[in-house]
Image 1 (cartoon, rainbow, N blue to C red):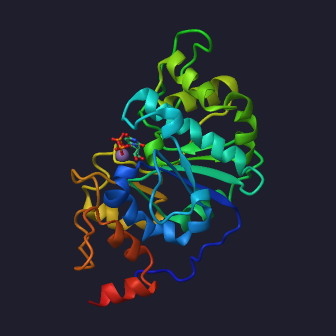
Image 2 (cartoon, rainbow, N blue to C red; image 1 turned 120 degrees about the horizontal axis):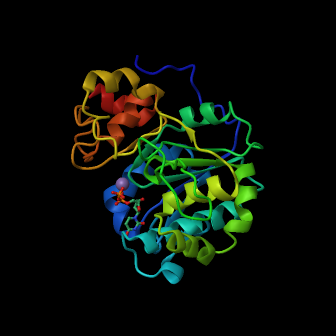
Length: 280
Ligand code: UDP
Ligand code: MN
């Protein structure tokens, strides 16, 4: 049996899961997540989306079209969307200990995330994720002419309750964050790293178990992947073989183009729907 029964979700810390998405990605991306990892943490999952998504409770969605305009993969637009993360976090600060952003092309091992975050103190300022670049971002301009690390939002980024409290004066409304991105000419995730480093002195805590599809080689070594995937916390997918393409299509009736369902069932072989499929 591939599944280690002893590793049940501990629920010792309360995690808010935020998923950034777009109504046009509902079929292609979100449905796969909703039927796998999100199903395990549904009541703690919230969506930042341009327009309404089907089958999701109204109070679990933040709609961005009014404030951000039409969705586009541009600096201003994505900064505006990310700015809504903090409005959502603020609203739920009393209910949760950790606040994590994920993109809609990610798989999250919620057990591993729980286990990891429960080893840390959420009353300490934390900024956790995977560094996007192999070295610091060089910064020479004022103010704060010092280099800093930033985490790629596409690998997932977790902030402790204390960090959200400290961030508050800098993210009081959406335009404050967008103005900051534009002023510094930084993308949404770079600006977050800058804000935390420069204004709050909170450094990045790197975690190599967070993955995005930026890592071209992560999925190409089958032996290595199969040896280590149970310890990973997040995975990022992209159609150009940046997914574990060597995993079998386990359910012939439901398409699993990026093997998200296959990965889920390898991690949770005890789930009824997985038992059925794995036996087929
Ligand atoms: N996204 C969005 N609006 C867009 C394009 C992308 O909200 O117009 C979101 C998308 O749902 C995802 C994230 O931004 O959560 C990153 O987009 P994508 O994965 O398409 O691009 P990447 O930057 O990872 O190559
Ligand atoms: Mn992506």
